[in-house]
Length: 160
Image (cartoon, rainbow, N blue to C red; front, side, top):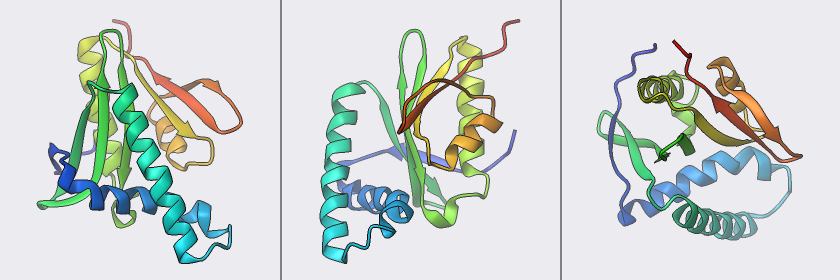
């Protein structure tokens, strides 16, 4: 298991500008090829961000939404729904300069250790084009369903 020093705190309404910046950073590559001007990109990202926030709030009402901190500074967020029969990784995102340095791996491995202790699988959804799908596969997640846009992936703890 990778040892990365991060802290967490609950996400607050005052975090919305940071969360929007984080969300926008995850969509930059995708929308850059569309040729839109800045105002169009911002309007689209704002609409998509607000829709996603409403969806997560409605479908993962009991989920824990945490801000990920490194050296006291927000670098990402993680949204986890602990359900009776499974753990759902609703969303995880890191700022671009924090990707690829082991933080995501460490956080998922911690979640896997928690899930193994509880004897629960972890389920998540990922865009088929998202590079994170390779990370999830490397960490033992298997595709359980997919369509042309998303893949549902599941990790199951070893049965003793």
